[in-house]
Every structure is written in structure tokens, then in C-alpha cells.
Amino acid sequence: MSSKKRREDDIYINPKYKKQKSKRVVSSQFLWIVLLIAAAVFFVTFFRLPMFPRKWSWYLLIVLGALLLLTGIASASLSQRNILIKMINVVFACTLAVCSIMLPYYTSVVTRLFNSVAGNSIRISLYVMSDMYKEEHPDLFSSYISTEANYNVKDFSDQQFITTQTLDEENQAFALKELQKLYDKDVDTMDVLSVQEAAYDLYHGEGDVMVMRQDYESIIDDMEGYENFSQDAKIIYTFVRKIESEEDKIDVKMTKEPFMVFIGGNDQEGDLSKTGRTDVNIVLSVNPDTKQIAIISIPRDSYIPNPAYSGANDKLTHLGMQGIENTMKGLSDYLETDIESYVLINFTTFKQIIDALDGVDVDNPYRFRYTWDHDYVFEEGKIHLDGQAALYYVRERYSLPDGDFGRNMHQQLVLKAIIEKVCSPQVITKFNALLSSLNGTFLTNISSKSIYSLCKKQLDEDIHWQIHGYHVIGDTGYEVCASAPGVDLSVVYPDPEQIAEICQVIDDIYAGKEIAEE
Image (cartoon, rainbow, N blue to C red; front, side):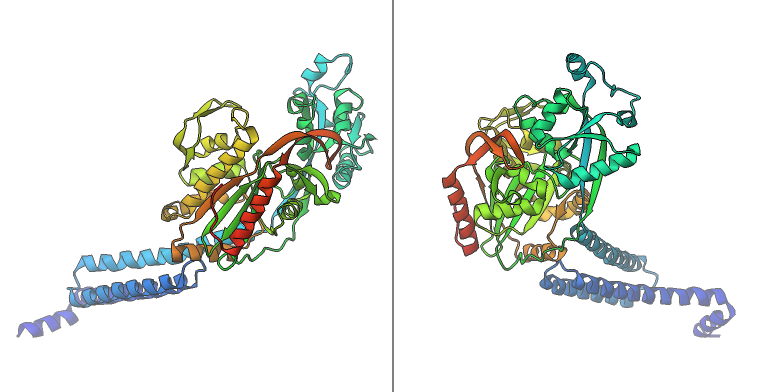
């Protein structure tokens, strides 16, 4: 019997032999077909993603075609027992399958970040003087309810509550309604016209409990004689008024036209709200064609018209207490421009973003020491800042030669460093950490579509932005503010010549002119 005949007989006589040979042939073909399908799915997925330039899809098609050609030739020409080609097919197929899942996932995460409807909340608290303060002033507080451990807010039901219903009608009415529910009766109130009067009555025992939005704490802290309010008073209860925002996202033409963005922030940690003071007030003027960005910092105490009070002057930081839209309207009028987009952050966001980027590098113009709640020295020259150090860097003002104005400059330096790092190729390796740091920690009205278009332009053109910084300075003084009638508060009178120059810079950015850093 010939050897060929014996092999054929073995196939029929030995089913195990037949099964093994058949399995080898099918496995080799099947793995390459799986790779082909995975490559097709990945290409279609990549092609439909909104943030990648179209030419990248054609580059990808060429790479995938070459990969499939090489693996196809190898699978057909090499022995079916060759494990290496099978492993290559499996590894490439699995990699492409994972990428086909993860890329849409990350896209959906970014979309949710920018398209989520922001819940807005206002915190209205009940304030009493601390036990320590009362013990230091026995002539004003001969008897009182202790706020040490084991106290109950319901013990205050028979006390007199100080309100400012004329100043803050909706929030005061909400708090009084919640008090009625809490105590199952109407509370005894004494209504005053201003925060100053309310603080005076609380400090002097004229009333027992002050009902006030937490945003107004900064006003009291700024008043002469009440600088230690945060230590002298104690919050015994807080009501949270939820306001659902139905705001539409704005499609900003970030790749075709110049645009403006307001970046606002405060020195608090925790949840963000569209209603509240802004201690950081930065306006970005961007021209995507000339690749220029002007970062304009305006002092938080700038004395400018407040649209919510018919144009009466107020501190810039207080404009946000009537909502972020009020701040943008006030700055738009003041700078003779149109600011429609905003990004709101606080120090929690700030720290998390910088840590996600593995820190940032800034060129520090002078040596100074931060000593507010920690001892930290910043040397002159190039320094690396992690999230916590960057937070110290942008908060310090008392040890700086120009106080608040120097703090504004530091905020600009860090923001510039963040922009440069986010626009660099190395951000790809930190993308997951960056997304996690942003989740639920910022508010914006910019749509995800606008962000994707700018991202696509950045990747397509590898833009190196020219970033110019401008920080406004001015004289300081004391004035009555629209949001705090009858109270003299410290304010900044922005230098009118600088404001005129800033307005010209914005005009030049929009006109596509080359601007010089001042």
C-alpha cells in the first residue's frame, strides 16, 4: 500500500487525526478573519469619532491595510503549526477590539462632562455666635443655648431669627418655609435691610440666630470690625435650595472665529454652584486662526457696574451672587465685548486637574513664602508645582509685594502652564486621569461639539499657541456696594488706561492682528 493511501486511510480510520488536522486548518483561517473583522470595526469606529482629523482616518486605513496584508500572507504561507503567526493575529485582533470599545467609551464620558445639565444649589445657613465669643461678652449674652456637642437645632425654636428679606427675598422666604417645617410653627423674626445690620444685631445680642446665604460671609468678612466672623460665628444648620438649570449649551465656533470665555472660580472646596461670588475672574480672548490667546485677569474687588442693580457699582466678585450670567453681562459691558461662554471651577477642581497632569512648571518671578495654613517657600526661577503646591501658589497674596495683583499674575502663570500641557502630545498618556479629575468638578455652558472641533483642529495642525498675559491693577479704596447697601467695603478702582488697552487687545485679537505682551 502506498504511503499516500495509508495517510488517507488514517483520516477515515482515526477520527482523532482527522479532527486535529481539520482544527489546525480552520483555526488559522478563522483567526485571520477575526482580525479582518476587528480591523474593519475599529476603522469604522475611529472614522465616526468627532475629535480626530479626517486625514488620520486615511492614515489609519493604510496602516490597517498593510497589517492585514502582511498577516494574511504569513497566515497563508507559513506552516499551520506556526504558533507565532497565530499569536500575532490574536494579539492584534484583541487590541483592535479593545480600542473599538474604549474610544467610544471615552468619547461618551467627555460628552457627558460637557453636556450634563448643571444642578444649581444655594446654601442658606443659620448662624449663632460661638460659645467662646459669648463667654467673652457676658454683658451681651447673659444666657444662651450652647452649641457644643449634644446641642439640637430644635432647641432654638423659641429664639429670635434675624432676616434680610428685602435684600434676598427668594432665599429668605425659602429658609423661613423650611424653618416652619422644622419647628412645626412660624418662628419669631426681626427683619433688617442689610447684611451689616444683621451682623451688628447678631454680634450685640439683639437677635439670636441670623438667617443668611453662605455667599454673604465674604461681605461680612470684608467689613471693619467683623474680619473674624468665620471664627466668631457658628453654623448650626443649613438649608439647600435646589434650582434646576434648563440652560442650553452653546455651540461656539472655536475653529473658525475668535471667541471669548470667562473663567471664574472661588477659594472654597466642594460642590460648585452657578450662583456665588467669584474670587478668580479671568477672561480668555482666543483667535484660532492667528493662534493667539490673551489671558486677562481682573481683580476680584474691581468696582464696576452691577447689571442686577440697574448698573449701580459693586465689587466684581459680588456680581456672581446673582448668577454667572450676571457676571458675564457686567464684564461684557465693562470691557465693551460679548462674553457668552463660561467655565466655573473651584480649588478642588484646580488641584485635581494639576495632579492629573503630573504637575506643571512655571517661571516664578520672585521668592515668597506661603504661611496661611501651611509653611511653604517658592523659590525664584523655574519651579515644578503639584496640585497642593499650585493651590498655595495661587492663593497667597499677603506676602506678595503687590498683594491681590500679584496673586492675579500667579493665577495667569499657572493657567498658561495648564493650557500648554493640555495641548501637548504627552496629555494622551494622562487622558484617563484628566477625565476622572474633571468628573463633576466644573460647570460650563460650552457644548461637547465645540470642544471636539477645537480638539480636532489642535491634533490636525499641532498648534503652538501664543499666550499673552494681562493683569489689571488699580488704586484701592472704600465704597458702598450695590449688593451691600450701607456698608463701606474695600474696592479696587481699575486703572482706566489699562482697561482701555485691554479693550484694544481684545479688538486686535478679533481683527487677527499680532499682539504684544504687556
